[in-house]
Structure formats: C-alpha cells, structure tokens
Amino acid sequence: MEYLIYTYIFIFGTLFGSFSSVIIDRLKNKKSGIISGRSECPKCHHKLAFYDLFPIFSFLSTFGKCRYCKTKISFLYPILELSTGLLFFLTSYFLVDINLVLSGNFVEIYKLGFFLSIAFLSIVYVFYDILYLEIPDSILIILILLSFITISLQSIIPGFEIINLLPTLTGSLFDIGIIIGVGLIMISSMYFIMFKELKEIYDVLILTVIGVIFLILKYFLYINLEQYAIGSAILAGYAVFVFLFLQIIVSRGTWMGGGDLRIAIFIGLLAGLSYSFYAVFLSYLAGSIIGLLIIGYQKTKNHYIEQRRFLNKFRKILGLKKKNISLETKMRFGPFLAIGIYLVLFFDENIIKFIDYIWQ
Image (cartoon, rainbow, N blue to C red; front, side, top):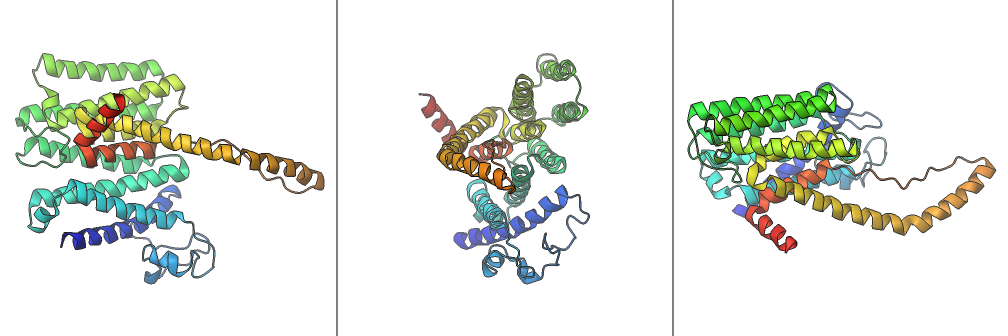
C-alpha cells in the first residue's frame, strides 16, 4: 500500500512539475493569469489541449516536438517534471509518516502539505535561477512566510512538531510573541538591506542593531531564543544571512548575489541553529564538486575550441558570420543552497556524522 501511495505522490509531483514550467515562464515574462491562464507553445502560441499536458509522456509521444508547429521542445521540461516528481517522493518518504497520514493524523497531514508546498516552490526558484540567473522575490517571500508561520505554530502548540530539525519545546504566548515580533523585524530589515542598496556601513549598522536586540532578549529579558523552534530559526536565519552578506561585501558581489541572501533566511528557518551551517557546508561542497566537473569538461573541449577558433579565421576571410566561443561559465549558487538544505532535512544526524568523518 505504501509503495502505491509513493507512486501516486511521484505522479502528482510530475503534474506540479509541468505546472511549475508555466509559472516560471509567466513570472519571467510578467504574464497575467499565472494560475488561471491556458498553457501554450512558446513558439507558435497554440493553446495546448489536455492530452498535451501529461508530464513526460506528452514529450515522448511527440518525440520532443510541438504537436502543432513541430518546433523542438527543450529537454528542460521533462527534466523539470522528473525532478519535481522525485523531490515529492523523497520528501514524503523521508519527512512524513505515510501510515499516520492515511490514518487521518492532522499533524502528519499538515506536515505532508507543508513540505510538498516547500518542495514545489523550491523547484520553481531553482529552475528559475538556472535559466535566468536570478531568483523571483515573490517565490522566496512565500517560502519564508510559509515557513515562519509553521515554525511559529510549532513553538506555541504542544505536539505540533512539523520540522524535526528545530527544538520541540513550546513556550508562553508572551515569550513566543516577543520572539515572533523580533523575527518579523529581522526579516523586514534584511529585505530593506537587499532592496534599498544603501552604503555598506548602513547595512552593517542594521545587522549590528539586530544582533544587539538578540542579546537584550537573552541577557535582560532572559528569553533563551535557541530553546524554541521560532527562536532557533530566526537566530539561524540571521547567522547565515550575515555569513553570506560578508562574502558579498568581500567579493564585491562576484561570489553570489542578493537572491542567495533571501535563500539564507529560508535555510535558517528550516534548519535552525543546529543544522544551518551543515546545510551551507554541503552547499559549498556540492558547488565545488560540480564546479570541478565543469572545469574538467571544459578542459576536454579546449582542443576542440582551438580548432573552432582556427576555422573562424577562415570564416572571417570568407565573410561568413563568426560563431562566438566563450570559456566563461556562470555558476548559480541558489540551486546548491537548495541541495544543502534538502540533504540536511532528509538525513539530519547522518549528515553530521558524514561531515565529521570528512574532517577527521
């Protein structure tokens, strides 16, 4: 029975993967009707029939071409659909007890809905970043708000344990209310830093003030933020944000961009103090591995590129159009941050053992 449910979840994920490609296109091109509009071929703009919308199978049945204008369809679409289906399956397998869901357990049903929503939005931002080298603010805001609300509920309601990486202790409404207020101020201030583009000294001043507020809560109001889910989450969001922000200052924005700062808040909220920097470490590790593979691949192309440059000289002599050749590859760090947080969510304690083993 469980295997059947996981199969359904995978298929369900591929359907959302197909839908995510529509959202990505409409967000980028600022089209109206992001949810309600009809899907169409990007080349001939023919409205797609219902049988054109079956994930993967529609692509295979038309041999990767538009049914109407015969234009080749990018392999990105089936990859996007498969990725979403796989992430939905892994999310339900590692983070949710399907038997409790089937028995009608409210907390487990909420957990399934929450993590599938997070997975879907993560897929949208990752592929958007891959395609356009930027991250849509609307998607990140929804991710952050959805996580913040869920973590706040986890800090107030006994037994409402949704994110296992965070503390399970619940607190008084007064303490949690203060922490939630500080968290909202922190997130608003961070977005102010990202959008206003102030001088760096003012950005540092704002972050310092937030840090002082945390110290006041701990040493004057005697509220230990780290023992509550929402407190651990906002402290981690602040710490990861500052860590990446300092790298942007040092590198003058060449290592990463403002979109990565938004993801930093999201990582902190989901992973908390105990796991956030493990997630960041795994992000760098994944980025380094992929980067080395790309460098290796480019080196194998060097001989071919030299031949192309030699041929381009003759193209120029003959008056033919020159084909541009570039060795520059821009790495998107946003997808690696997503890899890091999901590895931590799926494997938690095993990840710590793995990283400790690496350092030995």
